[in-house]
Image 1 (cartoon, rainbow, N blue to C red):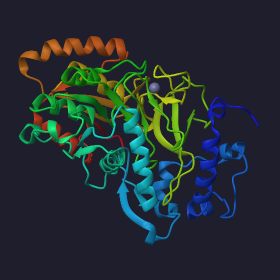
Image 2 (cartoon, rainbow, N blue to C red):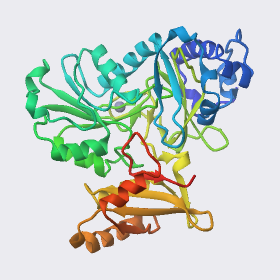
Image 3 (cartoon, rainbow, N blue to C red):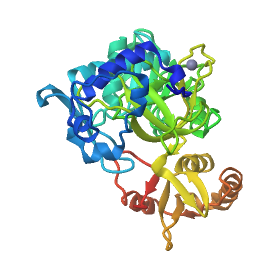
Image 4 (cartoon, rainbow, N blue to C red):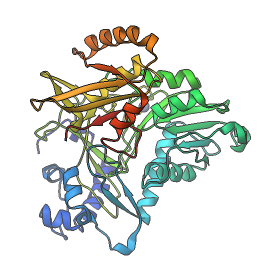
Length: 422
Ligand SMILES: [Zn+2]
């Protein structure tokens, strides 16, 4: 068997759980009919696993219900992906999946430093078919924490005087970093003892694992550790970090991770590639070698926290959000971070569409007070020239223009990047 960088970190626990995941997956019509696996088939070797075809998001969209490996009677919850790069996809959860979700998220919150008796302010929606808010609530309950389901708008917590509501008096906050940043500026009554801020859905560090703009804003607002976490609706397997960590640890009980190049070959640790995840323990819709569409780097050296489990770096971009502009490849995330850095707290939209020759085109729209426009534009151009090696056009506009741009691609998430290329 050929050795790959990834196989050196394949543990016995993962192998045992992978065999169970495989046997569950071959119960689904997708893995039998489309991939040609047999229902009685057993996974004999790691090499055989790595020969399995990659499951793509397009497979999930086009054959959605064929991924079901259980009777309809076993399903107790339907959730959907946010459809950031296409149509939302339906994902079924059984009671076992709900228990797995709780175990998975409790482990992630524990790694972030939470303990029984701590409080968790969940600044994430529990509605609209999202799985994330449900997962944090389940995880916190399993951990023995106290929950406040604030929602993304961060309700005014001063009105209920939350400090005495959690036995330890220590509160963690989980939410989307840019929304939390805006919310903290407005919110009175943040608890005096914040144990940590956990950011979801957006990176909190740059490619060199140094804190990015939004991370520093959150640190300055709370004087608490700002921690990232990574998961997807399809895999429900969380990568999390503690205060000393650099990047997010894999939970080996919950997933196997591969980082692959465009030809689906593994890349060496420290090299960015496509994040391919095989969740472990899934029941209703089990996936094998699922390509998340995200680009990131895996680190296998020892973490400053002392753990040796592999860590996933920040999402450098989505394969579908790689733009090719005037011959330069640039991820939307790099532009987003730059815009946030130069125009903090201002309403902004980054519109990607096509120019008359069919190439990718970017325009940045900013609602900015007139007296600051020239100075900020100069600052933006300097930063773009050094970081992107390219100058994206900036248009100053009224708030209404940004509302109209967002309406081009309606999304359940408040988004700064609007991809109207397709
Ligand atoms: Zn660590």
